[in-house]
Length: 612
Image 1 (cartoon, helix red, strand yellow):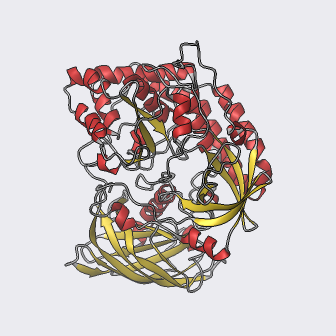
Image 2: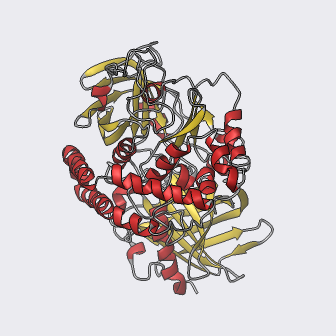
């Protein structure tokens, strides 16, 4: 019984290995950062009624076209410069910082849509040296939601003015450093932001930083401009409006409360969000006018099409995640801004059905509602055609990829092969994307068949517990469960406890995904299979951080120590039935030496529903 499901489980393991660092259940956002306050002034923006861009709008002083004020931070975002960032802090503080994590049950359990989630991360004093200039008494904290969470290479937020009021360095109050943990090429974030900017949309500046902490080389990070006053001043005439960050946030019933207000947060009024949600309820005949009164639809279509063009599946349209919305006081309308686009330039959507269209994503309520209306669907296709004509320049993008690759090559020698393979995959994506998109939208755009569930919240469906005994490397064998055994107890639902009649277990690196070891930062995979008296065959897949995968190691399912999923493999196609939340896995023995014993035990609460 066990062995006949081996192929199915291997397929499930390969599927999850691709998902585990992409599928954050819509939670790979860069995390909630304090809004950036103005530093200096900028008089440029675009006029309302067209896509905001880098300057070119009226200055409002009657003196002709606006002339941008020099931005002292431009040098810090020089695309040809890798910033050297050295952080020195108390070792015990660094150890605490990198181990801080979010509670999965709190994020996705009952009540998860009640409001924005508070950050669990603390500020720690540090000395920070930027390109040779040392700023004592700076502050450093971890950042990130789930997908980018890491103990060995955490994303970081550096603040120069946390303890020294008003202090800046090169026009910046701090640094936002994203670890590119889900991107073996290291370039997707900056490349995606470039495409958004080339499309004439407001988007962050981005370059690279080489980061060390207490002398330890953490490698290359994406240095990203936070979405705040400085960025808004560069793109809008009036930067005093309300800015919100969206993480699993949408304009549908019960979802708007999750938007976190980033400016004017002393004003509790959030009715502008509800006005957008209400406008989506208009009839097809009235939708364009009703929604157009509160949203710049033309600019949204261009933003939406850009998300689809670069395959940013974890953004707003693709996953109701990783975005900001700004309510522009001058036009009275809402605009979308991109965030966290590290999951881009890959046609694989781990949350989508096989064969989903490449030319559109429409899980977000605004995108979904517009795409349901035939005339507005045609307008989306026209926006995509215009984007391909005006902003998607393959030759320029390929040159940019080559420039980034050469710039980073001195820093990635240890992982050069994996980086090269991932970068070549992006080249292939860029080269073939126009043909893929054009074929889909001609003569008519395709249907979208992947609606977002009514809620992202999960409920507790039961518990699992057991033991395992296997050897390292068994995952790569033709029959990976021949050497593994253990126990596997399930109570789903709670009043129906069962024990597996047959067991298998395997451990190793997933051989089905080239370069995955680097993408996973060396995570170990443990797979457990059991057949039960009711005829169900269940699989568990654990992804374990190297610090936990040691003799005596133990870790919670917080998506940085351990990630774990429950899968039903009774049928030929595996079905994810839940994710592990409360509980832990313990290793009596664990080593990545070929043939080394891997033994231990696990217990967990299983969350299901929501996205599953």
